[in-house]
Image (cartoon, rainbow over all chains, first blue to last red; front, side, top):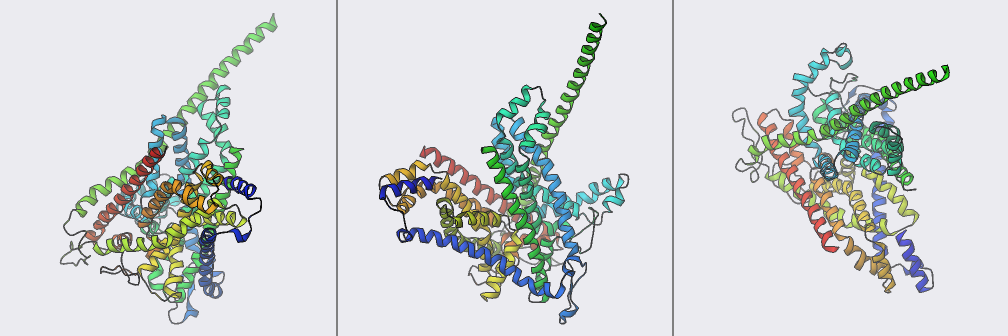
Length: 325
Length: 304
């Protein structure tokens, strides 16, 4: 908008429309930087898909439905690369993470916007932001050396002692498990979710809140019937953004999930995710057909996370235009 | 008469009911409010817990003599506590981030300027690409860096390959930060420049960019300080070396890389050393981002 008005002003002053020839060196330099990034992005997508193609050709659907991961070594025809455990593991850990992050994050954003005295709001918001400044490998180390023993000694036995606990959660093998990975991921994506949801909740028009309160609604009724419905598109976008982060997180997951390639649906048992499998198999895969299979998992991860990320940006900007209207 | 009695009955009944619902509504509201308080407490617990562990277990490691200045040692069963230091990882981390910055900062800032100033179709397409790339998983940057630098450029496992992965990771972040900083400059600045007869490029370079410089610089610092702690983009391509290396073509180690390796070792002494590295990483990120924010806030005050 700004540059529009200023360009109009300039055009009026000079009395002619700017042509391509009136672009100076500066405009070209800036444009070429932008063009370079566009090329890098295309090349990024292209090169990962390109390296994935041989594996897709040889393994076909087995990449999505198979569960064994065996390298044929010198005879690539014997190689079997199935990604089902990684796909389910990614979905399971991300779901656990997103459920925890959305529940805790929404509560946190509500508390920051509606409950805390104003001088504490910035402090609380900065504290949550600081969670994002801690590198993911630190969370991984913390989860592996501090939380995993806790799962063995306390959390696991407790969940197993619940009625039907063994059947639902599975027995504790090591502390490293799908549940622990989901929990650590929840902490890691919480700042992402809170940053957006805090903005969304803060942008709910005051007239709406006041109208609800003046009709005699309690604080919770105002939250549940007015604030959350007004912000639901944006909150959905925030959740999708956090989901995108959870899908692709690598090093922390490698350290807390146990890295066992098997199909597991019980949260206390170990598993793998797409990203963690790429990182842990990389050393032995380089230069072989296994590397292409890892690129294929990467391509799958890329499709999922870029899709989720694209959707979330759309949702968040739609919420912004809804409120600003 | 009967009608009035009925009225009174109804009124009484309604009053009782509304008192009951009011009591129930207030009760539910109280419980849910308490749950919100619980949520914000729960959100703060991990931060406190992580920092507590970092200080408790990390400080004894970093005060050990030679932690910053000696090369890592492989512990043996005869000398299980001989872990050495992290000098190579320290140098490696600095080298990786410096090369990444040399590549990413100019392109990212210029691209941010384009995003902020252009209203073309390409600009809005690029904005979508940028927002999508910000959410791309960092392990994919590692795969990309391997394909481009290690394979196609035949450089091999090296510092520059890691820098490339980090650069691609921070480029969209830098561009977005620059775009926001420029958009925060009041439009009157630009209009004043144009009204005085300055060319759009001159206005942009001499008026708008200086006014936005504080935001741009603090954006760069924040993005780069976060990038230092990233493991996944460099994990696949940096090679890992037990010697000090800073030449772009050399394989090297880096602080997060060494943490990731050490914590998976079987020696408790090596696992324990990761707390020291973690303390250094987190401490550096916190101090740098705190200083950048403080600096930006003070500059803003002076400008007003």
